[in-house]
Image (cartoon, rainbow, N blue to C red; front, top):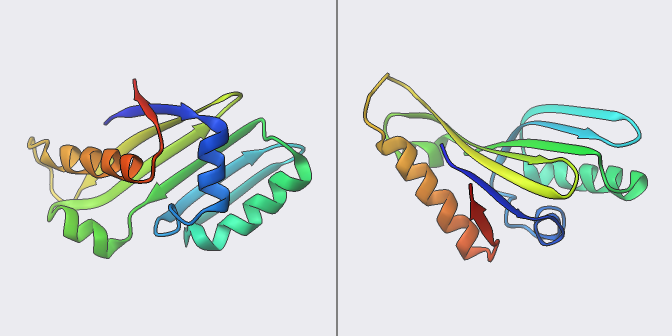
Length: 136
């Protein structure tokens, strides 16, 4: 598991107005502004993005905003044969955005290769999409 933080404005632009996260499924969303909004998936981010954008446009900067992204089954199977799930948890509270990677296995193993594969995938994803991340 790795944790990262990034600059908020640039990330929110890419998250809400560009298509780089559209291939990810979303397990759940929690957005707190003038009210608390909870959405449970799985549903592709491309479907939720306009809904979330409208909430934020109408309510202004959220007090708290969390998303759990997951990789779809096909891409999960391609990345690692023992992977049950790959997740990327995003948490915004205040001024910074934090990300944490997560994995789950089909069969218990002491081998950490599943974590390394996902961490490298996410690191490459951030670099490719010019998202400057600071590893924590």
